[in-house]
Image 1 (cartoon, rainbow, N blue to C red):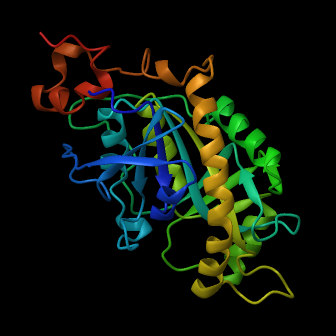
Image 2: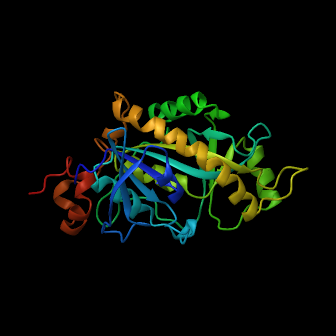
Image 3: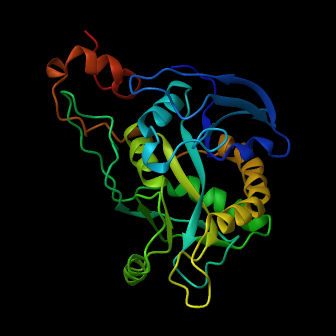
Length: 291
């Protein structure tokens, strides 16, 4: 692993345009799971190194169901990233969360069907604790900054991750609201699971673009609507990130994200197949004897 950056940002390529960011270079990374969505952009803001990844690739070329989540998170791990702040568009499931609001959820519900969301298998078994899937320290820091810059900010709540790429039916949207869900999106749950397995802090900055299709007086969500509000949100998101990055670098961590695997790996090291052990070495190396 390198020490390219301890802070990772995953979201749209427009995040590279944040004020004060100096782009240094790009890194293309090969992983045992295939290629990440895009080369990682390594930059610096206020003297702090940060690694950016365009989740869907530059030009938005990759569907949510096609994302190579394992490669994306593994690449961050190889770069030395210890904290990931994710920015993504979501639909609001509550009237009080309006388009252009920003939500920092702390829970997830999984409604995906076709996605690989673990590094384990192929001869090694591990079961991580995922009761609290978000790093609250990282989420609270970003939420504080969001409030400081004047964004309408909501802390806490539940993000429902749907399969997509289609938006919800009215029946689904109504059902999810009955569950008390706060926002709905298509990408963040698998990132959170894999970041936890990789012992990386992870927090979601959810950018509200629409009311899904449950709202009686609003038209059902369209791509044009989402893009329009995303463009409005982009300026706010980059301002939050620009101010958050130096604070993240300076924060004293007291969370347990970095020791998730300490008691989670059940397979004795001598029974892990060599090819599996080697592939996962950046993740399990400190717990598994290489001999």
